[in-house]
Each structure stands twice: as C-alpha cells, then as structure tokens.
Length: 380
Image 1: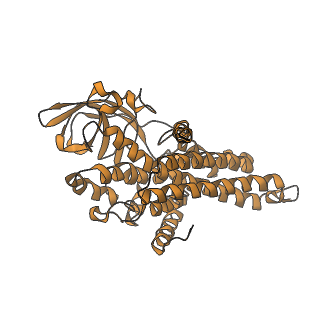
Image 2: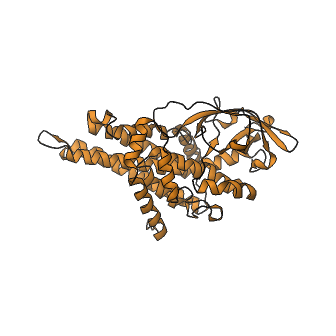
C-alpha cells in the first residue's frame, strides 16, 4: 500500500498549512469575542480552498476528496469554526448539488459556493427529528408547477446568513422516510423564511447556529434536488461524504492540541525539570499521538474509497467516530497537562476542548456511527 502523496496533494496540503498558520492569532481573538470569522473565510477563499474537490466546470479545483481532507486537517488546526463553515459550503451543499443537482442548478449556484463568494446551508434537523430523519415534519405540497414549504428546522449552521440551502421536506407522508424530498431554497429570492436568533453554544462559536421557519415558502419545481421522494437517499449520501470531512477536521484539531500540550510540557518546569521528563506526561502525549495517527489513516482510507467509487459509508462512520473521539480525548488530556492554564481563555487549549465536543455530535452523533458500524459487523 503506497501512502505517498501526489505532487498536487502535497501542494494543496502546504498551501492549506500556510493559510492556517496565517490566521491562528486572529482565530483565537475572534473566538474570544464570539464573532463570525469572515476575514478568515475571505482569505481562504482567495487561496482557492473553498472548492477543492468540486468540479472545475463549476468553479471548483477538481481535486479528489482525499486532497480536500488533507487540507481540512491543516485548516482545523487554526480555526475549527472556519473549517466547519468551509466544509458546509464544500461538502454538505456543494457536494450534494454536484452529485444530485440538475445542470441548471449547478451552473447557477455551484460557482459562487466553490469560490467562497456565498455561504450555503444544509437544513435537515428539526426539533423532533435529529438522528431519526423519518420523524421530519417540514412539508412541501405541490401547487401547479411550484412547491410550497411549511415547517421549521433547527441547528442550521450559517442559517442566519446563508444565501441558499438544501432543505429536506416531507412530500408524501404516507411513505414515511421514503417520502422525503430535498429542495434548493434561494433565501435571497424567496419570501416566507424567518431566520431565528443565533444560539449561544459551548464550542465552535464562530460557526453560528439558528432556526429557520418556513411559512408558505414557494419554490419552483425545478429546485427539486434529486428525484421526488428520494430525499433520504440524497441526505444520507451527502452525510457520508461530510462525515469523512468531519473526521479530517477532528484530526486537525487533535494535532493542534498535541502540539500545544507537547510544547508546554517541554517548557514548563516542575520539581526542577520539564514536565516532558515525567513518564506520566510522556504516556499522555504518546496516547494522543498514536490515536491521532490512527484517526488520520482511517480518514484517508474513507476518502480514498470515496474517490475510487467504492462503498464507503461504514468507513466514513468509523473514521468520524474514531477521529472525533480521539480529538475529544486529546483535548481532555491536553487541558490536564496544562493544568490550571488549560482552563484559562488566555490559552488556546480551552477553545479546542470546547470545539472538540461538538465534533462528536454534528454530521450524526457517534452513537449513530456505532449503529452504522454494528449493522455492518452483524452482516458477518
């Protein structure tokens, strides 16, 4: 098995590393103030990082998904919130439209997303439908050639400012989960969408979450993404790819934690010697390094399978579950190594600790990842 990166992959990785390094201090400052990281996103857009694995025909970079994941492993080391917002554009909306959109939809919306000129969102979760998409209540009824959407979505990342988004709706209640369809809603050209206030949350403070309420929102029939009543297939396919990207973000976050904890342990003196001389600290660092290396390999394997056109849903769930758990464990031990300093906002580690927790929840909770993995195991 050859783990050598191609020249193109190495170039993207190095560019992403430089882009991440240039915004580290700004990211920390923005998180403290709870501000949206527009300056970071704009700089990454100028570097061409928003559309890495989106088709060149629609403004993307045309790279494979493994290249995108390598970039995310670098970007998330600087600003997990910005990495998530880029991921939302690229993998949830962008890849969803690239896979299932019509030619007209792709020509109209993908270039702005791929160039980072507009933010998009993916609205699936509802107050009573999180891990169970079959519980969706938001509905779409056909009126002539249009569809009229009513309902509410919550936990919509960038829902407060997204220009457009993919919205999962029930189009045939009699079919249950098999009666779901996805529509592209252009918020800038549509009336009846109410954006709720931004939620206060523990981590990823730069990536705003809010509710979206739809009241008689009329969308053209041509805005159906994929086939009618095939929305669950669309959503699950999009989430499989997004989970690999989420795993890559977790690897990046974990690597940032490891570097911070290592540097602190080498500098901090206790009992006349650096903390790094104590075996208890060395073992913590060793466990972090080993788990993050394993997480990286699982993530790269899942991305490679996707690029090869092979089934990768279980690999995506495995990578997402392991990588986000590894990042959370690294952040916990990182805080422990820094001791009291690990709890101070003057140090970046507490931010990574807060951000790491959310990774175990978004793109499907890790409990759901375990169900996906177990289903495959039980097939024998």
